[in-house]
Image (cartoon, rainbow, N blue to C red; front, side, top):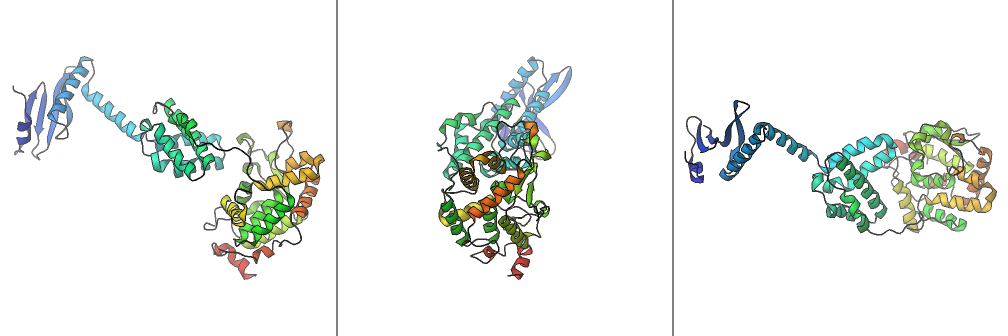
Length: 433
């Protein structure tokens, strides 16, 4: 039997019924009545005659079909069924196609989030969705190399977010290590690029600690047109020295429980910067004594946002908390970019109070939710030195908020903008002005 030629195959026309053209060695070209041409290989395995469908012509050329025939013969010699081997290879191919970086990353994230607090888990996934998935999310994990990873990180660095780029690199590295362990990656290209990242000057977050300069900063920020809720948020942040992220996510339920005769804000441990195993320990709730001015600020805020779930709602989505950037942007507009950040008010409070009351250093640390390093874990007492903390809270309020500054109520009538962004929350307040 003579072997087929390319010309014969091309000239083979459809007929009234299916027919085949033999090439030898069990390889045949089947020509269906529809005109479709496909390569099939007849062989015997385990005493039974079987057929292996190789593929359609011209997608599979004559040379490719013959190569597949010889490969099938080698498979038979090794005692394996070519048909079964093809099914396995097809399944492996589908699995490889599914092993994109995004698939692997989401799987890794799902496994890790059980050991993370909700906020951190959300931050990690958001950074991947914003900065990584749009670029390499659909690329097979094994095809990602160091230059590709570095390219992703460079885009983050170029917008000035060097610290964010470093955190993303760490997350990428953890994902690749997981991929290696689960057999879907062969290396960790994110580890290789560590030394190629843009250098970053380490240091504390910028903060103005001089008392008079801090007062002047408050005067400048309150003169700037801004949403009243943002200004009141900055005021309460100054007075309480809590972490900005804790402040902006405060639900009204926490302030609803405050006793006006003994005003203490109880922040549950689940919202504090604690190890995951301490998040359910009610003894670790943070107690924040409120000065007269802080209590007044909360009352004014209630007139604005008291009908919503959050004290500081998002300007466009009332049932989401304000972005921490809102406070930072207000400081920036007042001329304090790279000079003071929202977190810096904790340093302002700490520096000034420790200078004036060095004997109260431990108590001031408690007010900042800093657990002394020598404290025994099991002996944590949230109410420790509470009476003195109340005194210091009022002293700080009297120091930082001077009589020439506007009151919390007066901030409502000062330069403002965007008051109607969330009308269902603010309409009542406007009606009273």
